[in-house]
Length: 55
Image (tube, rainbow, N blue to C red; front, side):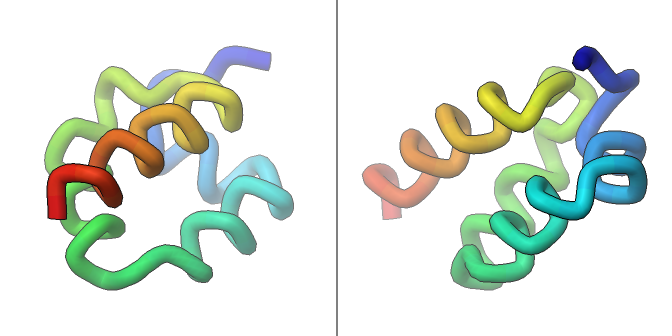
């Protein structure tokens, strides 16, 4: 399912929300800054992996 962005994804998908909450705060902040382009749980996992490697 596609969402309008990270905020809708996290409020509508419990699994995505639990995954997001388990990420380091720095990664969460990075994902929120670019959250308009994160429209699915799969994209959330992909971009979190990218953000974690850039730390």
